[in-house]
View 1 (tube, rainbow, N blue to C red):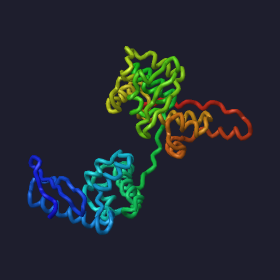
View 2: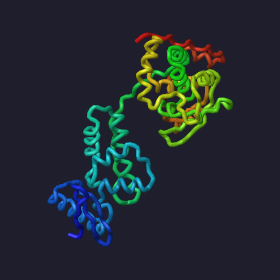
View 3: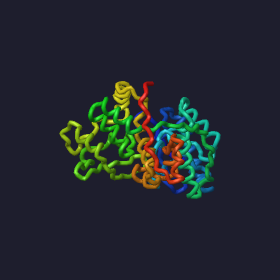
View 4: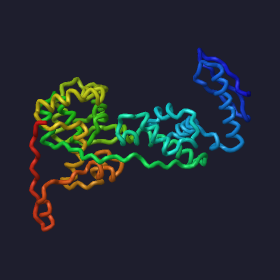
Length: 329
């Protein structure tokens, strides 16, 4: 065998030259006999790769390395790398991938299994397919039940703010007024806010970009009323993560006696309010940080319940729809 074993601590590793190429790695075992078998299997794969082309012995671990080196998105990739490890790519079929998604997320819904297992696994393999190392992997994803989420209204947000601390109330109004996601909002520092210019920089972690948001007067006033020394690096809303918001968020809802909505409902409310006020969908997508218009329309657009809106067909001006009253859960 060309590959030689050596120890690092208690774990056996291997290194050597196979088919003119340097090979090294960890067997991830303390058992020498098992380590020898693992090293022999790696050497055999390297010879197969050399003689029959890269796809013949391509493992998911190797595919993931190539995917990372190409600068591709790596969100949720670590878990699937740990699951598949040195599994040959040819063995990762649609059925095997779906079984893996269920195993990794036994209690999760279809959307989570799709997003966090199927999408990253398929992305890695199909990147290698583009390099002509293996066939493309086509997967019919788990069916996701459509959930209609209720958007927050201005009346809801104002009632919430009245029953919350100044920084929590401002956080609610900030998400409603800018369309920011909760994770984006809690990351805003005072250095990102220019009260004189009425703007705030929002780092869009989901799409890897930044945007400048306008601060309407009511939002500007809420931010101005936050008690703070306003050091540039200080978090505007004081919460270090979305998880730290949840408990105080629910408490404010209970005090206000309003419908139990999540922080993300404020982003829904931004889109719905803008669309209902006849702002074109492309502008709403741009101002709210949606990557594409289709996602905005499919997920965030909510139909108006007022049947009389059809009066506009005959030139009748619309009356402002009545804001739904707050209700107790």
